[in-house]
Length: 110
Length: 115
Image (cartoon, rainbow over all chains, first blue to last red; front, side, top):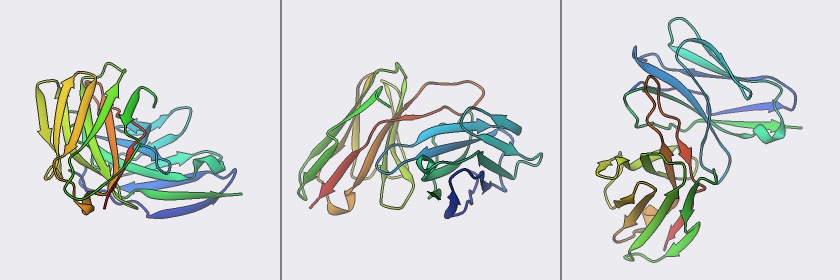
C-alpha cells in the first residue's frame, strides 16, 4: 500500500478556498486516489476520486500532477459546515481494503 | 447515510460480556465492512465480506468475530469485551465497481464503552 502523508490540521476562514495536499510517493500504476470527509461522531463520506489530471464535482476538485506522487483536494469558498476531518486514501481498483490514516483536521472560522 | 443502519447507537457494557453490533443496509450492495475508530485516529478495518459466503479478516480482527446472515446484514461480535475495545464502530457497504476503487457508504456508528 502507498504510504500517505497529509497535514495534521489546517485553519481557514469562511469564503476562502482551501487546498489540502496529500503525498503518496510510492503510488502504484493501478492506484486510485480517493478523498473522504468525516464530521464528528459520523461515518466518513466520499467526496471525490481520481486517477490523473483534474477531477471536479459539485463539492470539490482534485488535482493530480503527471507523476501522481501527490494530490490536492480543493474546497472552494468553505463554510463553517466544512469543518471536518479529510482523509486521503490510495488503493488499487482491485484492492478494496481502504486504509484510513489520521487525516487532516480542517477548522473553518467565521 | 440512512441506507446503512447500525444498532445499537450507544452501548455501555462490562468487561467479559458478549456484545453484538448489528448492521443492515438497503443499498443492495454485496460488500460490507466493519471498522473501529479510536479518538483522534483514523479507521481500522476489523472484518470485511464481499458476499454472503465470503468473510475476511482485516487489520485488527483479534477479539472480534462476524456473521453475514444475509446480503443486507453483517453483525460484529465481541465474545468477551475488554476495556481497550472501547471505541466508535462503523459499518460500511460498497458495490463492486470495475476500473476504480469502490465508494464506501458508512453507517452512523455505534459508540461502545467497556467498563
